[in-house]
Length: 237
Image 1 (cartoon, one colour):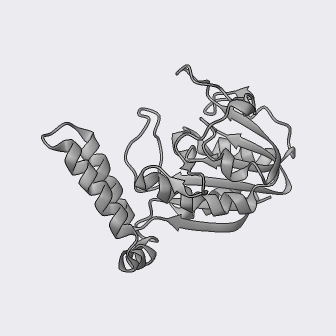
Image 2 (tube, helix red, strand yellow; image 1 turned 180 degrees about the vertical axis):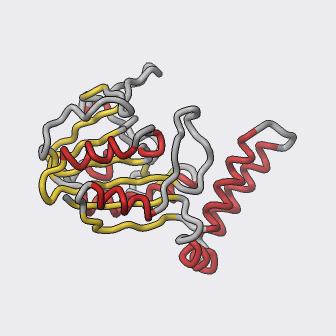
């Protein structure tokens, strides 16, 4: 990763005690992704569609090195890219069977031909290497017009079978309470209206309060298969 010494956490952050901080949704995503990434990241890792490398802190102590690949940045921020690549058109510029882990977080929905990228990620994995992939499901249109797909777990399994990858784990995160919270929060941000700011603040505090209640957690557990915010897949070559 270029400019590794300049890396700072962006969306997913922790305080000095190692506790996730940030918005309610950032903490939900971070707490869902972290244990999976920490458990399955190993060796040389290719972070495909890395962006600002938001999950580097989760895997940096589990790997030997990381390679960052993504579209080029145009916002003037520090670039961590080792390879600038159009993920919609180009093949990954890495040798076959060359990396121990491929990490691809919330990228596949932005790929016009996902079968091609999935095949490329499988190609660069070493035998027994791990693919860690996350995708949203019940989620608003984002980064338009480059938001093309939503995938069920059944399609993710199909991708693995087509590329001779063994599914190690595939789970939903979030559930009906988290989906409702996220959609209402994004609805508040959709347009201006009177009392927008105080209503958003109240909604955020209410969401955080309810999220800690055992009864709400039970609803999330029961409902997440039908109402997932997204999926976390680990597959092995």
